[in-house]
Length: 214
Image (tube, rainbow, N blue to C red; front, side):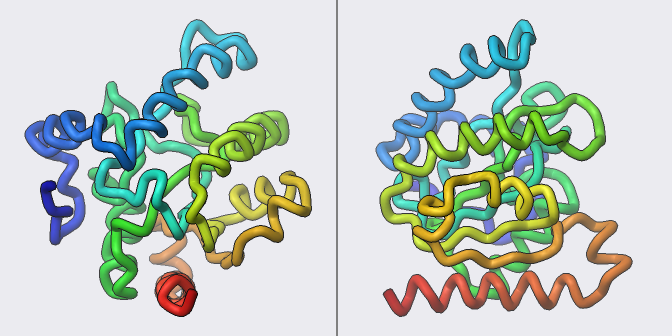
């Protein structure tokens, strides 16, 4: 098994993307890839689109063994296959991914226990906030995904969209996990609100401690 990178932005390399793609049949991630392929056609029909772009799960993530889910807003351009890696990963070639990568590293939260996902999992093709209809549909998809993550203990909600979306889930689903709320790890948020970086670090440290204690 290959080792995760020690520095951020590694998925700017075509070789790294090819290596990641070749690992999609690994046992911990293959069931999620199959689920993703099944959802594409249904989502396209619901959204009345010819097709939807759903970034692939990262083989360096926990996959079906994920214990900490990092829930963000929606895929950025660098997560799309056309403009970036095609993966949802903290190794993507953008500053938000870099902020998550470095904070996970500092918090000593292992990649093998973590997975990223978005409240709106499909690529929106424009820079904007998800609307309520998109959040509702995204939460329906998350509700279908959660049973595949049988070891999940902690959900970290990054930003208002993730926090608002999570509240749309049934109370029983919400209460099944430890919830941590933080700001969005975008460069704009980090640069204009210096305390946000520390809050993110503290949340990741809490998540790491929680899974060590259970």
